[in-house]
Every structure is written in C-alpha cells, then in structure tokens.
View 1 (tube, rainbow, N blue to C red):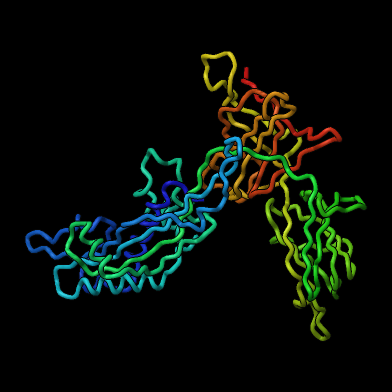
View 2 (cartoon, rainbow, N blue to C red):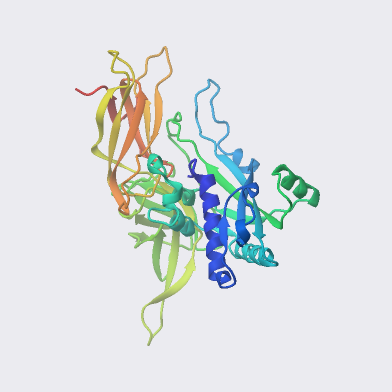
Length: 447
C-alpha cells in the first residue's frame, strides 16, 4: 500500500512520462524544451531574448475520493480501540500547460503532451517500479538520505491502479483558477489522477478467529465444484470449516468432475489428484503454494486420437477460492533484544523484535503481520492485543523466505497467543476444550 510519498510519486511519474513521450515523438528535433512540475507563477519569460519552451504539469488540487474513503469503516470499536486503518483515498487534479516565446511552440508542446497522456491512461505497476524503484531515474530525486526507510515504489502495490483522465471545467472556473495563481491565462488542459490510497501503519486491535464457518459455491454447468472440504493427510473425515494449511488434502465435491485425464489447478500450481470420481476429488495441497487467497479449478484433458499422442485442453470447472493459512514452525517464535521502553522504571511496556520462522516458504513481497492476544487475561480488564507489520527485507530480496522479523513497541508484559498473518490469512491456533492454548510467547525484558 502507498505511503506518504505517493502524491510526490505521481507528480514525478507524470513529469517523467511526459518528458519521455515528447522525446520518443522527436519533439526535441523541432526545438529544445523542458518538462517541469512547478507552479505557473514561477515560470517566467526567458531573459535577454532567451527562448522558453516549457511543458508544465502542476498539481493544483487534492480531493478526497469518497468511494474508497468509506472502506475499513468504522475505524474504532465502541470503547475507542482502533480496529482498522481506513485508507486516505485521494484524487489528484493536475493542470497541463505550455509556455513558449515563439509562435506555435506552445501549441505543439501541449498537443504532444495531451497525446502522451491519452496513449497512457493508466500508470502500470511495472512503470511505477521502474520509475521509482532502487536505481530508477527518479529514486534519487525523491528520496533524500533522511527518508531511505520509505519506498516510493510501494505505490505500485496499492489495490487500485492509478488512472489518468481528462477533467473538464467551465471557462469561468478555469479563469478563476488562473486568477488565483496571479498568472495570465495560458493554454492548458486539466487531468485527474485517481485514486491514490495511503494507508496508516498504526497498530490495530486483532480479534480471535471464527471457529466454524461454511462456504458453498455452485455453478449450473460442469465440471462444477460445489464446495471445498479439507482434512489432514491420512484422515478420513473432512470439514468445510477447517482451516487449510500446507500438507492438508482438499476434498472437492461437485458434479461432472471426472474426465479422461483430470488435473487440479491450485493457485499457480498443478496437482494430480489422489482420488478422482464424478462427484468427488481428493488432492493434496502443493508444498510450493503460498499462503493467502488461492483458487482451485478442475481441468479435464482430452487424450488425442492416434496417430497423434498426448493431451489437449478440455473443459474447465468454475474457480472456487479458499484461504491457505500459514504455519509457524515448531519453536519458530523468538523474541529478540527485548527491553523496557523506559529504562528508568522497573516494570512497564517492552520493545524489541520478534522473529517468526515458518514451516514453509512465503513470498518476500507478501504482506506479513504478527497478531498478539493476551493468554488468560485477568477478569478485571480487557485482554491486551496488538498487531505489528514485518520489517522490510533487504533489497534485493529473494523471491521467498522462511522467516520474517517484526518490530514490536509498547507491548505490556504478559504471555501472548501468537499468530502470523500473510496476505490476510492468519496461522492456526492450537486449542483444547478450554480454549486456545498456543503457540505462545512470553513478552518480558531480556537479561
């Protein structure tokens, strides 16, 4: 999700996009030009007869996006605890204007600039990473030495892509805009960049998982998967509400599931079922599958007739989503560098780093969080609960990792149930008839 550099990032990307667009269209063969992102009142005519040819993109208005602003509401519970971090959703309004001392040069610049934005209506994720990532042409200009902990390239990871579209206003409103800038009216075109989503990194109170749920998906034409059940490998009983982890078996129920040759696509992996029937398929969860939301689909392959050989694609079923929960390795929770937040007191909140080792690889680009819920709190107060985000990995990071570290701050001393959440999927807690029992960690200052 985007951080506070998102607004400057969009302006820098538009400036770079326009500059590259004019160069690619060989405008520099007509005359020298500049692409800037300055307030129009700072652009003056050339001194001593010097020619000025400038295309300027200026952010003149930042407006809230009402649609996305209502996501993750309410942000606080009835007793005032923070339970969600709503997006700061913004629409950015830009003025594209051209300045030139020679006849028609301004019209040429504005025409090519508008053509470039018309041909590039969306800032793609690859373009954002190239323009703002490490070693990109804009990274040095945006991030000074004091801001290296922020990454402007996180703009590419936000849920909604940024769209650039023309924005029309009346001539009267346009004249008022130029008057407000105390600048004579120039040729200009207005654009809207929507939407920029800035997310807070404040800790939120986590809730314990639902212990039972059922999801059914039905489709009229087949092969059709109507529901997914899961069971531990080797078990005979399957449940629709059991949390799915690596090593489990999926039991797919439906109709028309068996074909001449049947495979099951799970996420980006393909698996050969252990049991295939017209109404039931049993298949193991691939070890390479990453935690989070994944889709499962039954694919029929048709055996080619002689003299040809091999298989060719046949019918495919509907896609049904399921959540693959991460698994914390045995003894995979370690509290590092634990110390009192205030060294001048004998007891109080603790700060440090918590390392979580997974029993399987997770994607380095996946969003990882740690959820702490106090185990056996006293009856006279609510249980302590915390959420912390994983520390950034070194750049360049490997595609997958098996451990992540989480900076923890202001955690009251107690024993906590620990869950790791990867792309929204939380690890499973162990339980007995009395409730949840682990895994746990004792948060106390180190020796």
